[in-house]
Length: 349
Image 1 (cartoon, rainbow, N blue to C red):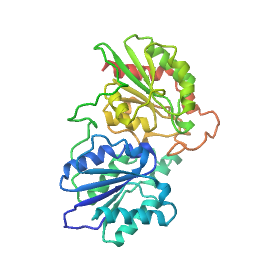
Image 2: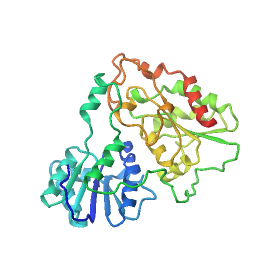
Image 3: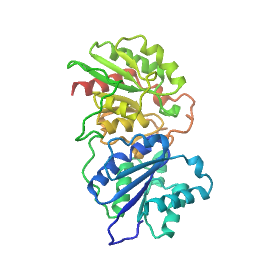
Image 4: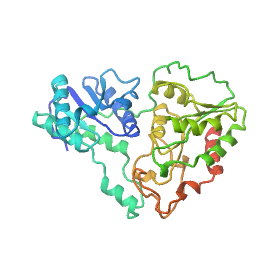
């Protein structure tokens, strides 16, 4: 918990490293906080790659992408915190991560008189969901992020709608012209962990069926050589399916595309959270993980979730465990027809 203070805050450090999706989840909370506290300067520190997500950021928000290889060991976070404090003179820290690295940073800054507020991740409740002892949703990560800023006495602002709210969507070479009758579907078929990935041979059936509609344009998202090789044969079979895996683009391009899409089909992955930033409706497919663990995308609806109610689900909070049965039936037993119907339901809204 943060210590109470009547002194107005001038500069606040925000820390959130780790996975791309976790960092993307900060934006719907951090942007409104910055906008609601225009006299406060905010410095958000993360890894280099996710730092590029923060487009159209508020004027009082600085985002620093840090090469953590330069700050290894116990002394690394101490040096990082000291260097940043010397540069920005923080009077508060919002720790949205609560791991050893940020604990060392917060301890360093406390010694310098900085007020610190730390996220309560609810680890115990999440373990209960996985073990089956708790059969209901835990508090969302977004809500937990917001409470950190409330601890510091900051106004948390208005509800986030889109990263483009009140601003023009930038032009992008990867975004073609869209006809009035067109319906655009973005599909991100991959995930970091196998328990969170719908089998590609079944996803192909989804893509094939959706592509039968000549007015349906499908954009395939992903990255990495293996994913490119896997998706190419599927994309080449249809004139209205475009793979972005061969087209060089950045987060601004991807968000510009998503903002014009009618629906996004994705796994429980970073793409699910990136889609939320663009305000596009999302159909999310869940296997080894579960929305109850607090990682649903911002303003995404449970009615658009695809999952099977199985005794063995969820088997982990983050999806990083192998299937105890070896067949990942939590994903394989989801029929393509269920996913197709979810996507078409959104297209009809």
